[in-house]
Figure 1 (cartoon, one colour):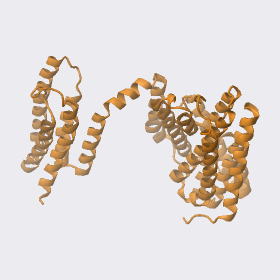
Figure 2 (spheres, rainbow, N blue to C red):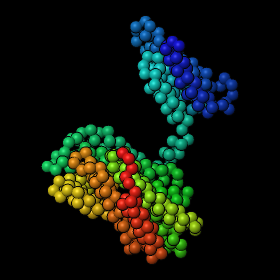
Figure 3 (tube, rainbow, N blue to C red):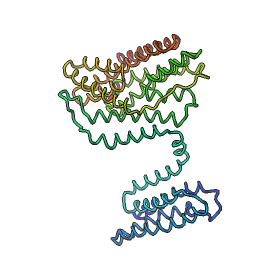
Figure 4 (cartoon, rainbow, N blue to C red):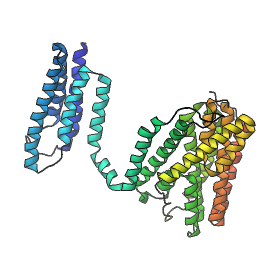
Length: 418
């Protein structure tokens, strides 16, 4: 088949895909009462491809520019008449029509794969109007500002930082520290947005699972406070166990993203411990979970705690590198265990980044497991201090069982193949 025919077919398909969404949305409108539907959008995409082909054949980009300007003027004029008649101030269909023409031209004159992806993305955005508008109604200005700050930190601040170590032990890399800080903030913020979009009225399960993505320690404390005022503390301890499961799975995801060579060492013990927390949590939570309420989840993307995280990460990363250089494996394990009681993410990321230096992946995996264990013990201790005995002893039992199973798997089951 002639490549030009295939590209023109793609240009037509892009227009038909967008026109399908536009036509479905206006399917109840009287015949001939709308400027553009599935046929018009399909022809618009094909027209863009034709003008691109003519411009290439004649060696004149001016022809394509003139075609785009003429199409924009005619299409906008008809849409203006329709808008005046309907008293409609939306410009979405106009922008969609111009995008279809441009994507049709790009399918012929440029990268057809990018044009196809752009057409699919355009149709998806148009079809997501209700979801996006619902998201805007649910999100507050503070949450929107947090997303903008995250974008600035990622697109502006991160490229300006030096991507090299600046300390004698090779532990303090400003770019890496900021990158990991933004990564953790992004994961936490997405979990928070999920709660806000789904709504806390969906119950304890949704809020606990999504809240644990932000901080399993914070969720455990919140559940302990709720348990003080509840006659049914055992289901709440099950919810705290589910939060512990999410915390382990979150760390495994970070390991897979940052340093997958460490996963074979921690995969079996961590997954079995997570399975233990999940089974105990589900068993005890769903026995009597009605009327328990929701665990509060605050906005995780606040500037001051984020900067504190970066500072703590820089200190622990430098200390871990120095101790690993001076004392070897025992220093790294001790540092991970201690820092894991304060923040498991800091401990895990500090251990992972040393794999690129002189620490074997197996040793880094042991440090990650040590951080997970001490963090789990910290949550059990906080439950003892903040919650009633039934809540605290149940969570402590879940934690002890998960630690025993995880340690047994680490000593008995061989590591996964790399």
